[in-house]
Amino acid sequence: MESKLISQAFDRVQADAIAVLIFEDEAAPAELAGVSAWLEELRTSGEFTGKTGELAVLHQAPGLAAKRFVVAGAGKRSAFDAAALRRAVGSAVRALKQKGVKTLAWWLQDGDAAAVIEGAILGNFEPDVHKTSSKESKPLESFLVVASASEEVQAAFERGKILAESQNFTRELVNEPANLMTPMLLADRARAMAAEVGLDCEILDQDRMRQLGMGSLLGVAQGSAEPPALIVVRYRPPIESKTAASKSQDHLGLVGKGVTFDTGGVSIKPADGMEKMKYDMAGGAAVLGAMRAIAQLKPAIPVTALVPAVENMVGSRAQRPGDIVTSLSGKTIEVLNTDAEGRLILIDALTYAQRLGCTHLVDAATLTGAIVVALGNVNIGAFTNNDEMLARVMAAAKSEGEKAWPMPLDDEYKDLLKSAFADLGNIGGRWGGAISAAWFLREFVGDTPWVHLDIAGTAWLDESKPFLAKGPTGVCVRTFTKLAMGW
Ligand code: BES
Ligand code: ZN
Ligand code: ZN
Image (cartoon, rainbow, N blue to C red; front, side, top):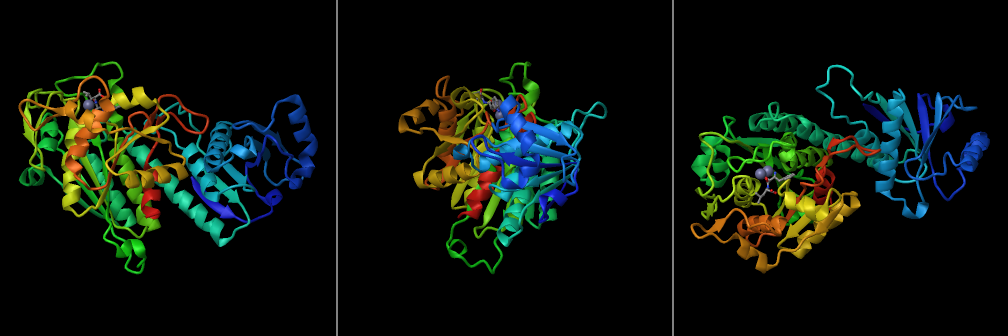
């Protein structure tokens, strides 16, 4: 979809439709006097009252160059924020494209141009790329933001466009089935993306990882015919950005779980719903999407992304319950359950991130079913060893409208990981499963400020929302980018 910011009188804009927000508790803007009778009728009939998500379409509105005039409900002004705007635009885009609208203009009166373009780009995404017939989606071809263009508005528009396109890049990766998104293919995508936006990309192959001693990661990978890859993407700030952040020694590491398919391994998962486990690389894809945005928005802090990519399979070479592996850190692990594989690959990547000089770490992973039990599909579970670091991540998430909820990591939970035969076991029993998983990671980050985001409940939508298609959400891309930009 093409998108542009234009400053033009809204009644002169040529498009299939031009839309404007109307608040629930307010009169329409004075410029809409020409259609006031229509609006009045909508209100008194109860057809359109300005509630969030409502939409009314008028063809051949008097004095308008656009073919249709659309009012979109913004809800109450007191509850209106960037997230509400993003949703309102997304809902309008998704409803209007189904009506055959190809070019949509948005007359921006209230709010942030970034949220408008984000809502449109995110709302235009459909997960049906592999359908060759009867595609449900009829995407918009062009989206225009109509606003009085100041430098500020222009910058917000560009930023929103980069962010949302990067989030859709992540959604595309996650949406691919596991036969078309093996660890090597994910590495190829990362390399291509890095080349496109001017980042450095290095792929560590199996031999290299063996030399380094990443026994925990390789133990998971050994059951698959698909070789593993450790994807490392580096962003370094331009020399001229000698701000406080670049003068400090801080170096952000973003680590994302990249299990391209999770059968569970020998501790195999039930067949029912297993197809969804193609999204077990959503954390890795989010990290790559964030790097795509970071490369273009150029924060002052160096950022290194690491994506351990493996396929967790059953087979004669697969690791067995009870196997003991030695991680890159030197700690030994008893693999009590081969389905708790995410933590096994993440810890070698976290250790390696520290060796590469990362001083602050954030990881995103579809790590546990238990976080879905705890927080459902609404909040990311956030764990930390450092409250200041958590506060930074929570603030970034909040400002991007990605909900996260702090989870506990008391010392008492650590005991759940005791093993009789190795330094620790890879599972902690039935209760508090998201917490013992996070504790497992914590055992390998030491004192490095670290936040773990469990996105098992938030990286995939089982049912579409008015503003977002079903399937991959691309969660964490905006939070990670914001975190780096605000450092
Ligand atoms: N990838 C899964 C976690 C998951 C479950 C993500 C459901 C999304 C939806 C992870 O590798 C896993 O299987 N975890 C196990 C851990 C258990 C064996 C301790 C789980 O959550 O059941
Ligand atoms: Zn698993
Ligand atoms: Zn998994």
